Length: 275
Image (cartoon, rainbow, N blue to C red; front, top):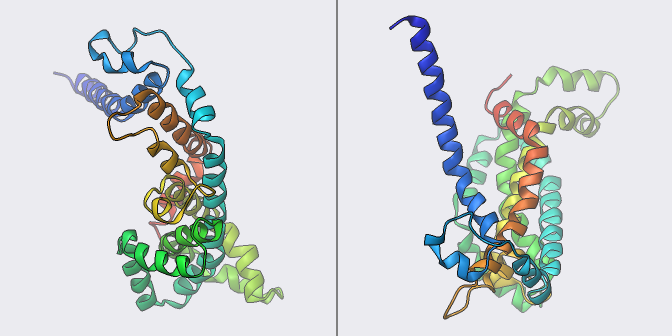
């Protein structure tokens, strides 16, 4: 077998493996979309075939009208956006300080906090928030999500600030800029890929969080994961409605990831290599 033939077979095998992995990853999502347009009978009748059904919008009508999905969508977006912005407001200066002044002990402490399961915070939070009357309020939800996203953002951003040459910041000081001005005008602009990556991951965490919402939210601050849970009853599962709701909760994150893909890839790779 010639070298050219071996190279061709290697390329074909590599592409086949890539497409196989892509199919394995994408198939559950494709099945979810198709099932959202099927009746309960079609979904349960697995022998009928995946593509042989009459499409219906009844599941989406049920999700938005019977289960009032509009409010959970707005709640999830508001809580995710505000908690991410607050975590960035506190986390970016902290990450800059740790990266610039080599605060290794503080960095390891933040990593330790990040490793603690979020469920361990639930009882203290519920006790504190219930005593001061903050259960089923946006403030409680935002604080709960922010306190978990904050160490995550700090840990991601520390390598970015460590990798930015200090000479760029010193040049800004020579031109009359303060340390705060240099941080805002120089450091934040250069670390933008990392900021976008950390922001998106923190928002996704908040968007998909079920545990905190189950304990701290109520009828007024209900989020999408809790609203989806309403399709599951003691005796049965409304698979059509559940799939339609899952599409609703997945599509916004998928669209954001597609549009920010360039920055996400750049952020994940740049943070791993110091300049």
